Length: 82
Image (spheres, rainbow, N blue to C red):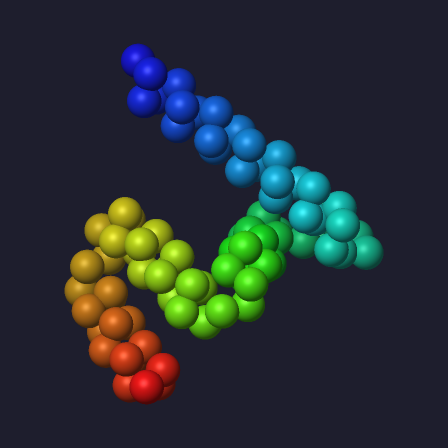
């Protein structure tokens, strides 16, 4: 199935990007978590823009079905960002 193949390729590329970021951003890449490296990549991808980081986080939580959390997250973002 094409969609699964593209999804598998995207996840494989993301894992490679995380590995590369760990190697370039940490003095000991083995001590850094994948989540730390991904966080740096997301921050850099969004050019350190809080709105971009928020949107990425919001969509990740939505995909994971954290709808109630996202309602609170959205309220907090709107009160802090405005």
